[in-house]
Amino acid sequence: MTVNSIGAVFQITYIVTFIVYADKEKKMRMLGMLLGVFGLLAIIVAGSLQIADRATRWILVGFLSCASLISMFASPLFIINLVIQTRSVEFMPFYLSLSTFLMSTSFLLYGIFNFDAFIYVPNGIGTILGILQLALYFRYKAKSMEESNEPIMVSQA
Image 1: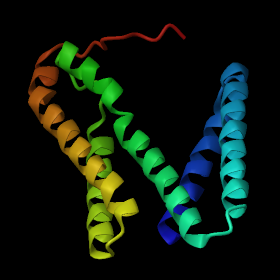
Image 2: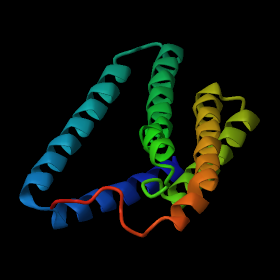
Image 3: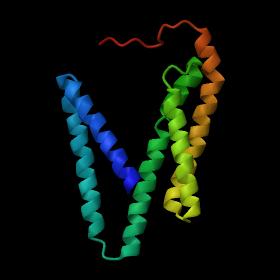
Image 4: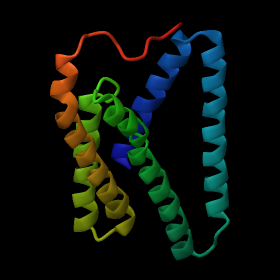
């Protein structure tokens, strides 16, 4: 609970900072998505509290948590295709890949030591995906540094 509470504070701080400095169109879009996330969270909390059996509630919330963690760890896979096609790691930040790998590995071990499949299964998948990201980074890092410093995609904003 402590780790997730601190993470939530950091995320909310980041989102608020983004919203404060974003242009009006992005600000409204982000506020809409934020309301959607909070709405979904409220539905999950209210729905799970309607389940009287504690074990059933634990399993339902555990599966929902696993699904959200796996989707979070798998989201960089969309960039992996671009990295392989361009042979460049320009759009895959090293420190994000490294911190994801380290965090998922530490929670994998925590889940194993506490015999909690809802912790070690998604974090095991996250560890494997983190290793894949780091392997791709080191595979294409030298090639990226050899090429010109011009970005592959240029923002038109």
